[in-house]
Length: 149
Image 1 (cartoon, one colour):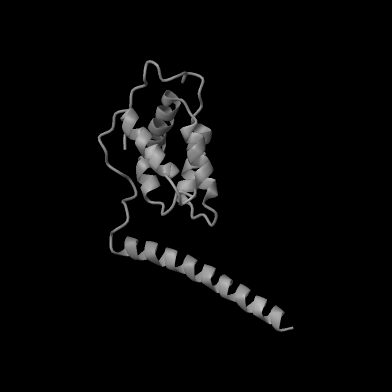
Image 2 (cartoon, rainbow, N blue to C red):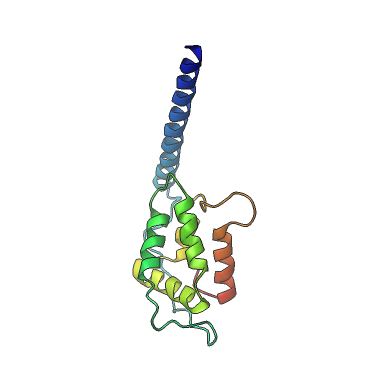
């Protein structure tokens, strides 16, 4: 009988911890917004689309829309399970260079903010904490391709 009470107590502590963590995260966001530390709703950038590379792969029949909606969803919504964000990052990295450029260009055209800016506003990539994170890999690729950031 004592073992069950102990398990219930541990489960209750875990549940309370999760609720407190969620409250702290939302409180931090609210405080940042209150004191003006959060990013503005739109970013005013002198923007020219990143040109495609001659040897960067096929882009004419490529539709970036599924990538845009997936990325916007995982970057602007709070996720209890960050692995969804990690999968979106891995999918983005699997594109050819020109397809990657098309997604980044179209992201800015559609949402008036850069993909990098929205990625910076997240507090974790959703991937393993060991080794190089997938968001860092995307930042490196953006640097290499000289896309808007």
